[in-house]
Amino acid sequence: MTDPIADLNHRYADAVVHRDADQWSATWADDAVWELGKGRRVEGRDAILELWNSAMDGFSAVVQQVVNGTSDLDEDAGTGSGRWHISEHWKRADGSVGILLAHYDDTYTRADAGWCFASRELTVHYGGPPDLSADFHNAWG
Image (cartoon, rainbow, N blue to C red; front, top):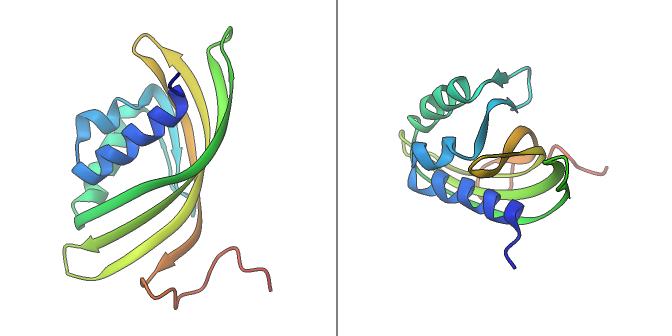
C-alpha cells in the first residue's frame, strides 16, 4: 500500500527537480499557506506558485530529495499533520552552488484529487556552500 503523504512529498520534490509548475502547484490546497521563515508568509495557491516561479528563475538547476518523514492522518476528517526532512543541491543562474538541509512542518487536507498541503512551514538547518563551511542554524553548542 502506498503512503499518500510520502507520495505527496515525492511529487513535490520531483516537480522542483523538473521545474514542473503544474505538478508542483497541484500539491497545494487552494487556500494553502507557505511559511518560509524571516517573515516570508504566502497565502493561496496562486500566490504560492507566483513566489515559487520567481524564486526558481534564480536557479539553473535544483535537485531536492525527501530524506525522511512522518505523518498522522485523520481519514474521517480529511486532515493531518507531519514533518518531512529535505536535502537540496542547487546551482544558481550566476553559477554559484550550495545546499539546503531543512525540514517542513506540514498540515494536510484531502481534496477531490487526493491529499495536498494545507500548509508548509520551512525550518532551515543549513544553507550555504556544499563544504558545510557556513553556520548551522541548529548547532548544539
